[in-house]
Image (cartoon, rainbow, N blue to C red):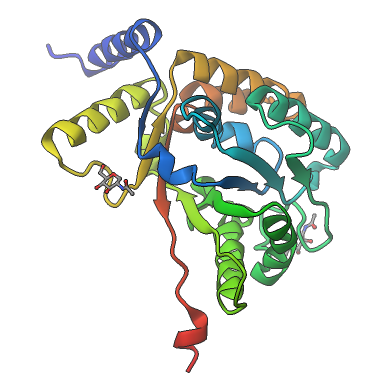
Length: 276
Ligand SMILES: *[C@@H]1O[C@H](CO)[C@@H](O)[C@H](O)[C@H]1NC(C)=O
Ligand SMILES: *[C@@H]1O[C@H](CO)[C@@H](O)[C@H](O)[C@H]1NC(C)=O
């Protein structure tokens, strides 16, 4: 009898072996994300390693010269009263990911608190973001998409806030407008295929090069970590010891975002023109 569960195990083992022994990082259009000074915009300490690690590592390692990468986290993650601990854990994680002091900031404002039911006001986000973007000549903003990967309303607020800023810079002549790229939320069934995902993504990059067919619809840039990248993302994750309850261990084992990031550009509609 054909045994689906056995086939699944065989696939996992093969994928693991291929990733360990043959795996190398892969990218498509990575330079698209790396034009100038790059700002990673996150909502909570641990977003940077749970979701964005493949990109952060690829930006610093795959490009010569690498772009300057900054990190701005809009809350200390105080939902359980652990804000001070989590702020320090974030520093440890960013050390592992190579975003050093002077290039990373955490905001702790009453309007932007870690809250699983609250959307953050895009005007507040835009105001906070503006000073960092202008002061550090940010040309590219990387953040969540409108599904926020886990549907967390704080995540979902970020592309709205960044779009708001870009629109307001558009109507201020002489101010540069950064480009905005958002991390593609994949359907749930694709999210937890863990070790298979680098294999599948590399295959699709390869196929799209060979056959010139699009893989993920409208995906603009794809980054796939190798085994070393995964180990480093895992080490960054372990800096967040206050967060490492059992289900997060499962997450880091199985999540696609520990291996693969896909990006699309978000071009905010021009509100100044559509307003009339
Ligand atoms: C990104 O890659 C796709 C195909 O993989 C290509 O069609 C597109 O032109 C690339 N974009 C840039 C800006 O290189
Ligand atoms: C979270 O936000 C909701 C409103 O969406 C509010 O009622 C609640 O008090 C907030 N929780 C905390 C801990 O601030």
